Length: 580
Image (cartoon, rainbow, N blue to C red; front, side, top):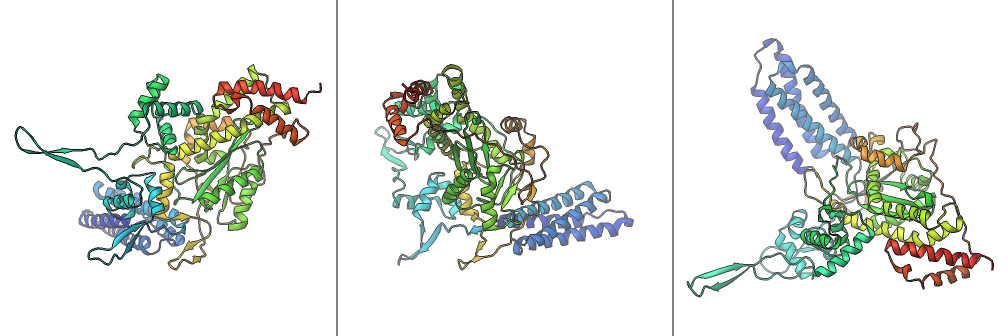
């Protein structure tokens, strides 16, 4: 992980030392102090380099070198007037580079891998002359090709793009390309002419009419989607469509091409060690007026949604079951961070009883500090939450829905809670597949970052480190500052995120202690009132359901059809439960 950093850093360090040694100030009275700082700088560089090379994982030792670098930094600041500006800049930047490298090593060492990265390539002997054949796991290659082309996979696998391409063709994951060029003789001049053909295969076989139908369906369900989320949803559905075709289709469907623009979001710096280092989880209460709560888990490293569900309650056992379903797919994270809600107790108890308390298996903190998932909630609200919020209010204003009447809430949930949950799952699929703008690197999707993070860095987890023999070793993980782990402090100044948080978390305690690893003395309870089924027997419910399935609008996802469904279902309900 740090090999390239070490090579680059050590080369720059040696250059800086040599340069600094040649720039000797003329003041003889300060010679001793200058010489001492230069010697300390050289020795610190040697110790830091050795520490990063051979002591990775030893957090106390790395921390000692970091403290030494900070102390030297303060000394240089106090005696900066002894050096000329150029030498002072070189020494200061060198120390800053050391501190940055050490801090990165501390963060990575604090959360070591639970499973070593998979070996994507293996040599096999063919019995023929030449180099051994390089084999790739077909399942892994298929997963990678869903996110990147062969040129993007090759550097990760450590081979040529041609090798990846050949294996993909052998496994039936790609089609052979046509010849690169066609050579023919010009009938007039007799010269041989080469006509080069495009090597880019069609991304999708959808016709324009079919694409318009799919895009219209997407916008019907998620009317606020921008270009990236539409592309992500198409990718999730298995359609690879060029941006130009999507833009043209959007114009045909909506007649408003100017609205199909990327919605830029400034992505501030956030650092955890790797995939499954830290999951954030929370509940979103935007629909709680109608007794609907959305719970979600998101991987902090990749921003991938690992679990999401719309429920009719805010109970701890519901959140735990969602967590267990998520780890069944994505494995157990090393740590989980949540707020002071009572609904988080079972997840916290699960992590602490199985993996320990003091290591920070579960980190309690205010929801405003759980900024990773707060940003996600804003996108959830925009993606499908506002649609249902407006729909339910419209039912109240125009179609007789009363949120205080139990039979109304029962009917609302019976008709639409599965649809809200379906929207949540489809939105998560689109989110995980859509590409995010990342500072300093190519655009990548959350699922791409998670998958290739596992390939390159290994999968984090709470159980320890797997050694070269495949045996598990105990690993005492250390975080020097549990309270700040997983917090994006700069994003706390984002007024849009804070406004969204305060709007959907109005009752959060303001006097809570700093984040910690033990259950806080005060917990926040957001209770969802229970309601009773208006029917006395399951047989009556089944009869009601059979009648619903005879209504044409029952199968539609159009919100106007759903209004009509509510009106008809409400009348049907009262005809069955009202004594004749």
